[in-house]
Length: 341
Figure (tube, rainbow, N blue to C red):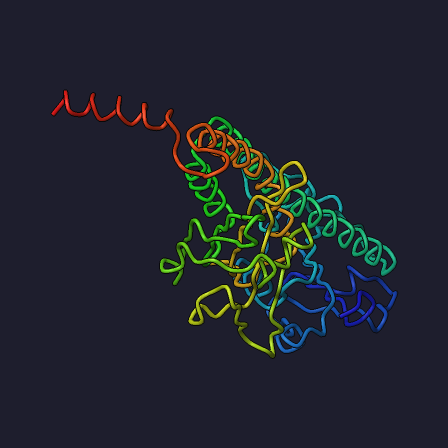
């Protein structure tokens, strides 16, 4: 309901005299005075009340049952406690919890509708600031967790020389942070034009290891061509989607493919399916996963280059057969093994 719609309740103590509080002035039709024992429950349930001022005594107290019922019925509308000026209602005593859990506003009779409207507008502004502070705190907590994960990824993958260990350590961290329902890690082979599934995790992906798809096919292929994350989300009416690179029984509502880029080249692709908690993946998840995989791409590229250089050192450039260096290394290893056993 818009801020100007509905009535504002003025809830008075059961023994209060409305004439003493209001004087001779009449409240506008947008205000209504009721005692604690006669709360308009139907109006509160139907959302016809936009705010409520409730009276407390000099110690900041009011009927506990009435306040619990008011909070249960009021939902998200503003509830503002007030006391009469001079009875000490506005003073908050250290170590004591008032019924309102906030500073009570002191008002001097007769109550002015204009003042009540100003207080209500201030309360709306304060509530909006509280919401912004809560959102900021949540964002800061998420950023802190992301930075910790990013630092751990750089530390754990930067010194690894085995490509598969780089992938395993990276996906452990990514899975713990993003919690996808299923994921696959594909290595790119531009020379052959294929993407090969190297690691999997989650529902129904165990049998996909070693599967190859063309580098131009499916969601991973589109992400490779674009060189940026690709998010595919099913419309709610359409239900689940099927993807050629995934098992048919793995019905997905959202699929995110993030290419791993290093020195301008695509090293591989991480494809995630849904989220275990929030169901569909979001554009925020795409940005997050892309950021987390940046250092992983560099570490994986370095490990692959090292493995490639080792392979070149023991094979002939022309025939691709093992050379004498490989023969000598193998002989030494076998001689040492024969001595041990």
